[in-house]
Picture (cartoon, rainbow, N blue to C red):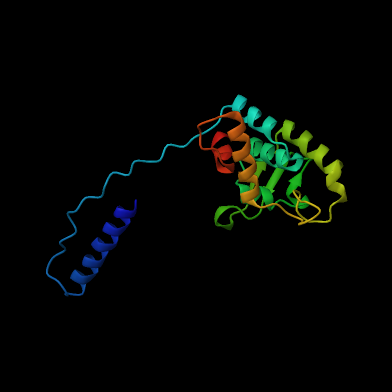
Length: 172
């Protein structure tokens, strides 16, 4: 991808130079781009997702990872959810700041709805933060912390797969 990006830049430079009569011909126009071998994406089966969730010891981290796995949200979208973003009556999650700041609506799975309602009715109600996923100390979570929880769980399970929060999105 990097080589192709450079080649494209060179081709466009010579194209521009020829338009401005700075050169007679474009020596780069016949250079072909390299084949881009797309990176293989790891994903988890439903059983593997459940095994991963079972290995998470942090109670809020477990709810976050379940939310990622059952909704397909990006980690940044999940951690930015506020109380206004989940409509339990309509079974919808409103993502306000998705990729490219494009808002979208995601269905709220029945199994996830129950988990979120239990979480919000439990210890979460004593934390003063606008974010749904919050700790009393900081009022939020970081994506690095969630990925670290996942890495610890993957190591416990003895998997060779490269699993991150984004892997859960691909698995969804």
